[in-house]
Length: 164
Image (tube, rainbow, N blue to C red):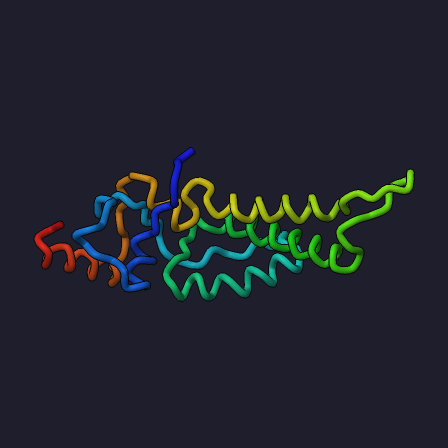
């Protein structure tokens, strides 16, 4: 397991205006660059997970952060979100504790479901480089099969700064 803060993906640095070629720690071309595009929403997703998918996919696509290989991780994230929401709604309705058979009180079972879903949501975002932050830690050579204006801008910026 890698220690410390996850590196910020180059695309997010450019979008946020913080990219500097002279301080870019990763070698250009070393970040995996899968083909950009929207993955197809799986038909087997629950209704709540599909709703989450429809909310986040357009924005991720608009930002240029989605690739065609992100579908499975995104589906798992959406299902974890649906479980998290269900557990949270249960806790709002029933409270965080339940009575035991001997007159005591214990945590509601939905507390564990909520925590488990939250952990899964965080973990699915970083599996196998399927989220932008995880991609920056990988070092593979990727072939870009289509013109990418952002990639061209980054390349020109490096040339203007002496390839730093």
